[in-house]
Length: 131
Image (cartoon, rainbow, N blue to C red; front, side):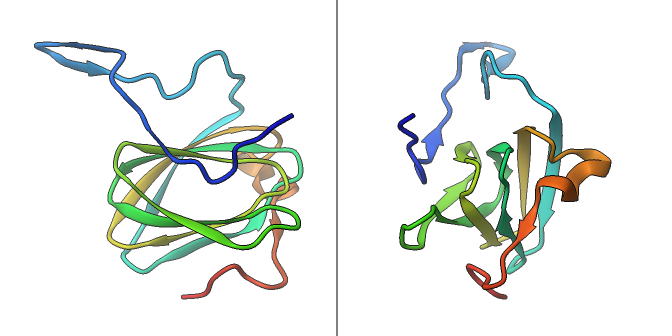
């Protein structure tokens, strides 16, 4: 399966009228959890990977740097801001650093949800980034 790592996407409106817009974040996907993660400016989150979970990240507001490292690849990063969407695939090491106060909507498929959050979260022995 050809996966496109570290490819951000700006989501477009599926429908617009005088009331506003409808923007589909995902289509035809099974979702096991929906989470909003908040960041204070400078906060670092992540520094882990998942073995079975796919994590779709949609920036609601603010701006964060997304760091990613796939097996046998160099560390890469991309700035994502309100309206941007990026995917964290299984075995992809990932971390976020907030450039300003931010909120990210995380949709996940896999065992990483609710009380089971830590079941498929593997902390890195060497962090991708520190504060």
